[in-house]
Image (cartoon, rainbow, N blue to C red; front, side, top):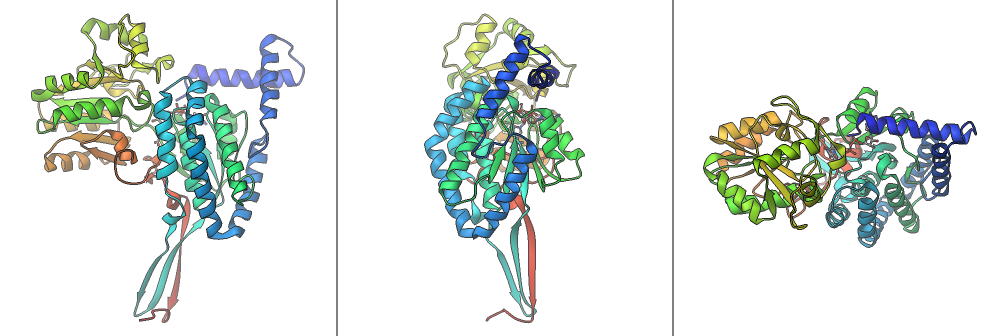
Length: 485
Ligand code: NAD
């Protein structure tokens, strides 16, 4: 989520650019803004256009050409995208870390590989046929047109790769308004995609964007008459904004995933899974474990298992210092606090150094035992800081998990060998993704079964988005014939 300060910064930069370009302001910041504008002009081409209007118009032309080329061409294009991203995914992951300053480059490589291999392609649109005494009915998946996609800073390249494969597979084109703090790597990703699509015989501009995205251009995209459907991936503000438009909006909003560990769990494995999952890309991913709730009788063993798996356990006075560093303000009991954005996605060892604890750089996660009312439990902090709450039994664990997830219905997990406990929690959470006995990234298909998505639409209910999500479902009925048996 952008903070008020960041939003003001974006507004100030745009005002500065306008003043500098119009020659009204010759001060240092205005000239820097003019330089930035000139640099952005140099990035035009290969899908990058100067304005949202131009980007949408180009995507609209590409959509029509894409339709003319037929289904086989889509298969060729998507295979070419996969090959290109196998080659380029690592470079783009390191670029994303460099530009955004958040997360772990090596984990971003994994994310890019995951979306490259596990995002479904045109095969997702297999038609369905029903035949009977009355004849035949076929269901087919038709494209919408140009999909307007808003992408986050937490997974900039993987969201663009994932959205592009799904949207193009379904026969659509896409115009992106990317996060301003990941604009360069996002532009680079979109240009690689365009060059790849054209080299594979597809039309130019099947995925487009602008070089200088802002909140205003995001709103322009959302309200553009030639955008058929919106796909929004981000925090609560952008989801609200999209749902205010009269368009069909597929919204992938925030989460605060709880991980419950009960007394029947393989506790050593649970400790390893929670550290691996909760520290993946320094906890930036919306699905990453953000709170651990453990039944008291196995709590000591679990925390020891987490330490053995690479976590550092905070002492009480260290927790007080940590609160002052990572929160601008702690929330009241059972409510989120205001996070200090400077620490989002930073390495555990750097956060520890800031509070005076010298730890091995290999430390992946900070563990803090806290009461259930603590802000760490209720805040989507996106840092490798794991609050652990002890409860008396499974009922208390599930009820805290439901409350602290805030009704986002995004992601939750349990470590248990009791199928009844797994079933009860899955029902109570009612989430898009529920994982039992693995790290949460298994629910994205990384070391788990199934396809992947980096836009998990919980507010609007589509769940893990896929080509079908970007398709109009159409039926043809033939009465009295075409049943051939
Ligand atoms: P963010 O909300 O700050 O930004 C996301 C995008 O929305 C950016 O492109 C930003 O420019 C735009 N935006 C933000 N506020 C806007 C407004 N008022 N009007 C128009 N556009 C606006 O989020 P972020 O920090 O980039 O990403 C982290 C958030 O996104 C977390 O809450 C995370 O849970 C969520 N997320 C969800 C999913 C999912 O699949 N459900 C995936 C990734 C991230």
